[in-house]
Image 1 (cartoon, rainbow, N blue to C red):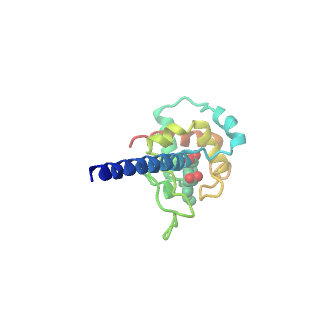
Image 2 (image 1 turned 90 degrees about the vertical axis):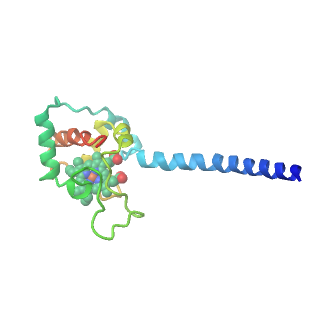
Image 3 (image 1 turned 180 degrees about the vertical axis):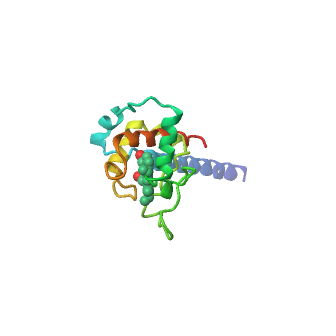
Length: 155
Ligand code: HEC
């Protein structure tokens, strides 16, 4: 009986180990999928090399906030608190990704300023994140927005 019990226990441990071994890479894949760059692979290096040419001051950051909450209407999808809102009623999140939560520290760490600038210029392909440059904001204004987005970190 004890023998039978211990065989059952070892069988259960082996199965648990196997489940963990199979599910861990899957979980990690899903995680990295969310943080994976939205810039196409062949343009990533160039995008990452773009640097904010401006000195960051409180005034510069405030100008970014005014654009975010005003003319550039980022708040309509990303929320005034930067945490992301569903785009319209009945927003199907299985077919469309949610507007990014800028307060997410992991996202902030994963993205360079250059990649964010690139997204403002080209949009995130296949999502509701359109290109804003040059139709809605200029290059200089885009850097103000990049700077303002950084202020959501950890909020
Ligand atoms: C119509 C809704 C909508 C508006 C308006 C909008 N966004 Fe987005 N945005 C999205 C969605 C949806 C995503 C998620 C796309 C994805 O996961 O690839 C996103 C993603 C992003 C990303 C993250 C891309 C990445 O690299 O992970 C940035 C940065 C961004 N938006 C900035 C802005 C800024 C700045 C504005 C205002 C100029 C703005 N967005 C306006 C819907 C919007």
